[in-house]
Image 1 (cartoon, helix red, strand yellow):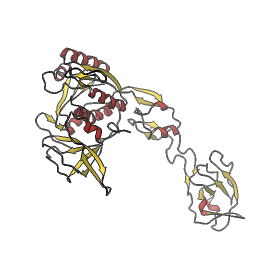
Image 2: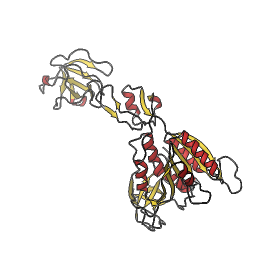
Image 3: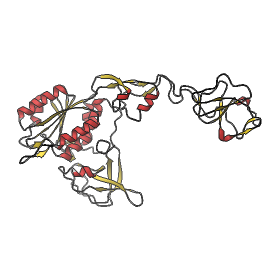
Image 4: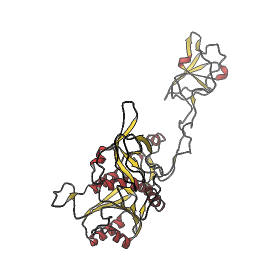
Length: 413
């Protein structure tokens, strides 16, 4: 990743390091039913109350025996059956074997299971046709999970990968961090809510809509404060109200250097600013700071810039605040690009791309076209970022570039 910054522009890596080093997980937990815990984050280590499996059981359909009773040539009579849910009672008789099915409890005295394919039925009983290894094909109690062991550490996001396992332990309720409260608003006289008619000079407020969608995917409790006009008094009052209600305040617009961009002035009055400008494209005017009770992120007004900075910076910040200790940045890997890419040295550049495979099955990436920060169609067509180094210039077709696949925030699940 980019490690450089120039003048008052801070690199993405340094911005992320500063953002995460200054914030902590929001306190507050609750106990909720396991059936309602999808996408929640556990607040304590989850300890298994039982062994998994709960008893020694067979890993195969076949026959169980006492290894010391097998002489390698004599058939063994079948002394009983052990099925899942219907185990054999009592101890296995000496010199005998037991019919056993996968998952069935191991009867007392049995220490080895031979799979059915390695046996032959004779008038004298079961003949074992292959060499036998003592202890084979038996799954021991607690072999998968031991009673009292930690199954998932605190900070684990609960998804369909974890929930069935927790249910198999008989755990009905889990302790999770409370949902993060995030206040969202946009600023600008030119903005109109989606669904309302546009007046002269107005555009639709797509940024707040986009941010809300991503916050809901991150399972945040969203406080939508609407569109705030370019009035320093109204904007200041909105910041005060948002700070009182939320853990994190996210605004869109008003963080540039225009005459009506009041956010920086108000933040200087109400809190502190951690950093203001990023050495990335798009997304240079991104603000991070602290209000009296909450953290603050100011997204750029251009739609692509807002979505990109949310994805690269706000997403890991929310993971930190919400207690998700296992969040990882998307992986990057190198592939050849099939189309030329315009690039001016000076900032880390995130261009939208389409990753595909060619006729030989090899990965390749192409641009989605126009990369302007106001062109959101470049996002709707893309499935990855093409990440171009800060000092890199124009890229020709055939050159190798870094790509970063979209995660679930920017693609269908």
